[in-house]
Image 1: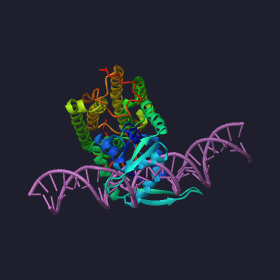
Image 2: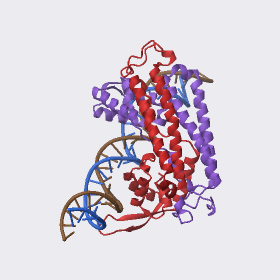
Image 3: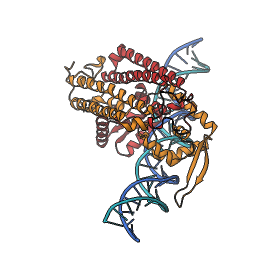
Image 4: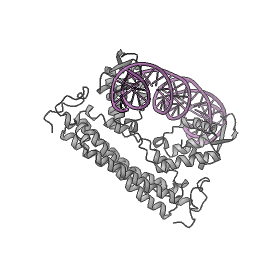
Length: 203
Length: 203
DNA sequence: CCCCACTTAGTCAAACTTGGCTATTACGCT
DNA sequence: AGCGTAATAGCCAAGTTTGACTAAGTGGGG
């Protein structure tokens, strides 16, 4: 619920403003906030007494828009949430990691190719982020810490590029996926379909 | 829905098996799968024709457990999902990034301290992951690619440690958060409470 | 001057997640 | 033998998130 935070610093806002701001940050990508969630969140926060609906104006026959403000309680709650996120680690879920855990279900050649491909995609990403860091628009019109966030993403991505390439090589090299204890024991069924016969003599 | 994948390689399984396997991977952390989701997912996958309920045995007066298998259609679907995740980037949502975007709401000294703290937490994490990589248990009893996943996490974390420290310094140095265009213009209201008076002469 | 396409603002039902609950059996300890 | 604790299976209602939809104003090209 970081909608609360947004409302807090745009103070009197209505839902649509919040939506636009979020989309302009393309925050739907890295926060879990799609446009549809916003109005529900606003109503729920109001119920909980963290927000106040201060006005409901209507222009013509368009849907009425309700304007919100943060209450003292909301201020507190936000502070708490924010501190919590700043001071504590919280591993975010990562779909790629989940997919990677099924490595043995992919043919080795494809897995390696996909990893190399991923490395390239990441590199392209890094390049475009770098470019945006240089661009005048970002340098002059966006708060500086936005650039810092981009730097974080770049740093993580670069680290991952290296990993992708290292792992691609290992996958190609044909090392067995099975743990030492189970070498030439029978593993679970259901692994060996994507695998191109992991060559029992693999080392 | 990577429950499907799990069912696929443990072939005839019942819900509880899946649950245990997931928890043993502590997959509730990096996938978005809490124990409660499993049974619902299984039923839904069955409805969609991706799974088949093959048996329902009952031991004593305990809840009956239903055993599932993957259908051909499920096999296909899994293949598609898996490939999609392997070949395409998909930025996962990251709560810290979201929190960081509210940097101006934190006093500079606290922000810097929190960043340093984060760096330390990450370092501790990396250390414990490194240790587990050395441990015999992981080396001998777990498939090798599990270690590779740990390496990925370490690499990302290390990149982030560096970033935290660099940013902590910048925050402390007092550089203004405002974009060049808005220097000494009035920004949005609602920023300046956490900020310890961003000293208009800050540079 | 009219029509098409886009923007504005928000609703809603459906899907998905979650955490807590139930109720039985097995196990270890004294 | 008795008792408390842990493990076994799974259910369910409540809370969240989502993507698709509505429906009126607006603007500019032909």
